Image (cartoon, rainbow, N blue to C red):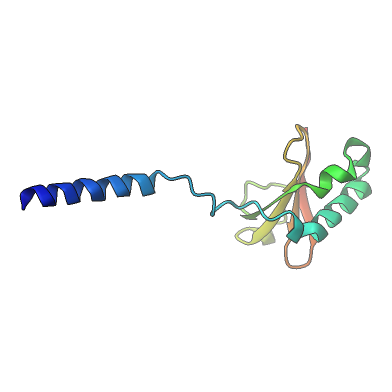
Length: 117
């Protein structure tokens, strides 16, 4: 009887260890490429408006990374009314000096940015 309990305990601990250390990407905040095409278009228009289009290609921005984040005061260029609210952050994944561009998910407007270096 004690041996069965010991085997059960070892099995349970092993399962907890395996599940606890698994790499689950379902909580990844990166969003599907196709579902935010309009956000990327708004961002590209902003880049052109700022005069940065000579530094980037439109094709690269079509594949830009879009993430949902809750804004806080670490985003100094962002209007404080967005602190604590969900925003979209768009950037080129492989670019070294690409800006982070903040977009309001409700109305697809650029609400701030952190310039690239």
